[in-house]
Picture (cartoon, rainbow, N blue to C red):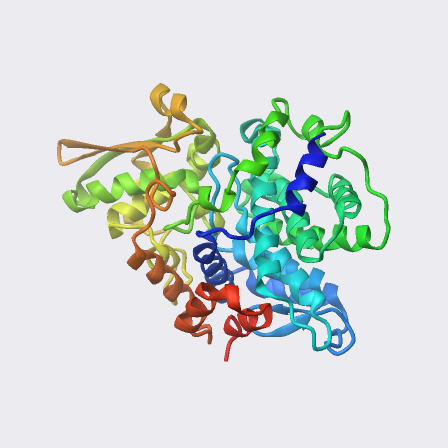
Length: 465
């Protein structure tokens, strides 16, 4: 039975994941950076505070921390806020085979659950937190592969929101020490909670940023209910009316068979650019070409990526050539191409400056950017399509001044097979934490030595001084 396999894995999960510190540091950096730079942050925080009601008393109530302010909320509310902030820049880690962002919902749920368990003077050892995160990554990515991510997207679902819900349940359930029956009930409850639509693409809406927060909150709520004795649906994933049947035309439940053999954390890549992962190989290729090209002389730019990426970042092309907001730019291949050719990169500083988040006006109306976007076409080709999803490749062709230059990239920077250089990883974290009041060196040191620390020490290091 699919659910039993997942529950058994959660009860025996190995927390010793060598790649976990890098992903935890990345999660804290992108969440705190989201709190600092995302235009949706004021609305998210005001909305969460409105939902939350009176501030809970840490001496008697379960509480968790809103990052980086240190404000105390209920675990469910903290999971909602921190999970949303971690995805607000679209800069969080990505698992290609399942096409989802596991860290944003999973770490938010595990952290909130760990803090909630530590009522009074009790301290939760970091090993329980790490085990919860490891289980959450494994479950989210396994369910994402099993639902068939391409078919799931074709039905209009956002896989991070839907499958991230099951990962958040695993993370919170392991941290809270739920037994087998309670975990089954929690997953059964999650089967009626998994949701998340791609309709945000219609107007660059902030729904996508909220999705991992909602998934993390659902993880807390489902485990709360299960721990209280609530009976959840049997076989919520592979049942006749379960998640796979209702959310996909091409599910692959057999993907669950390998859950005990994998380390999904090690399979997950870190993002060097704060935009849709489908664009990253194209940006890498354009970075190779950009030093050789005068942007003013560019006549045409052809971007070839997997068809799933074309649907998200290249269609309808007229709209993608005229983004008018942060989210629009994150899902526009023409904008990514124009930015890379003019700046030489699309890293955090270049992207945030171009979308008006660093005290400069946004550039999407800049005549130079518009001309380059108009010159950019987006499509796929049989070779790239045949290698997807094993490879998220790209080929770009730039014609400028009568000369044509081509570049191809099969694996985007940041994947386990092509990791970001240490200097770029550190620069990403330091840049996102700058101005937040959080000491980047202290946070990095605490995460690296987490095995001998408590969750309270970790949260303290991630809280503004």
